Image (tube, rainbow, N blue to C red; front, side):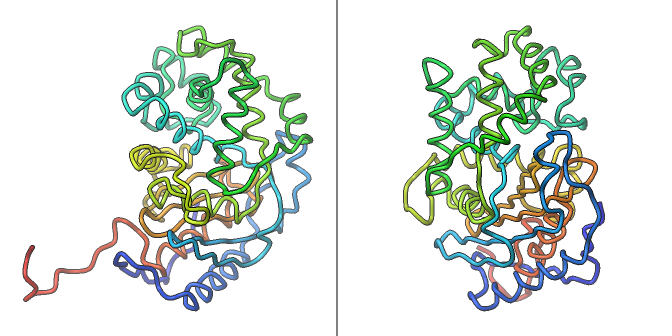
Amino acid sequence: MDVDAGGIAQSVGTGLLPEGARIDRMLAEAHAHAARHHEGRVADYIPVLAAADPEAFGLCVVGVDGVRHEVGQTATRFSIQSISKAFVYALVVDHLGHGRVREVVGVNNTGLAFNSLIAIELHDGHPRNPMVNAGAIATTALMPGADPDAQWEAVREGLSRFAGRPLAVDDEVYRSESETNQRNRAIGQLVHSYGRIERRPADVVDVYTRQCALSVDTVDLAVMAATLADGGVNPVTGERVVSAEACRDTLAVLATSGLYETSGDWMFEIGLPGKSGVAGGLITVAPGKVGMASYAPRLDTAGNSVRGQIAAAYLSRVLGLNIFASAPYASGMPLR
């Protein structure tokens, strides 16, 4: 999609963010810039999501110093949906290690829709990455716990530590998704048939469904993103949630697959790891600097928030966050 970034100059950042008042001003500008857009549609394949206010829009930025900046409807609650995949993956990598998780779940973009069964069959049952549903279900199956209830509590508790507060399931969303998740159940059965899931697939899919139904707001997501930016330490609570290595692996996967089949477009325009959810949430991570989050339910055809992408593109440029942006070498400066 067009992120409407023409004419917005790309700043080249150092290791530091601008001072707080300037961030507040740029955040307000990004919000106003993106709010002009009314393209896209609210997700309706999960019935309860269709009731979302299509004009709701909030933006939040949390630095690795824990300082928060926000504008718009940042207290509106919504379900985390696929954004949860990033944090469950980080928890599993932290628990089992880089190599073991890589054996079960790959790291390459499928180029196909997030709920594609063809992608599973094409690769002999090996989920291509943890940000599509097959890979996310396989990742959830790796969470510690003797039974589904214990696994679920490990997921809920882990994501709560990322957010810095206890998270709870939106029961209405959970019921609505449970009644319409036939495709995910089929994905679970198919991945299980290839031996990629050792637990009962119906139980794993149920935990995954509850995971996606966790209720968050934009501030929660920004704190969670900032925890990834801060090498696994929640900058608000000061707690280490996962290792720096688990963050590195997670951000690498988000860079290649965080926005499904349009992940290449996202990286080309924004130049940062990110992850979307079909309820309208979107996170963006500038490693070592800041976590950003938005809520805007209108989605493009790939299931990514339209306003969220436009705001992220704006902020990436004006805050100097794009990891690929550089300035010409200044002559006369010594090489190190």
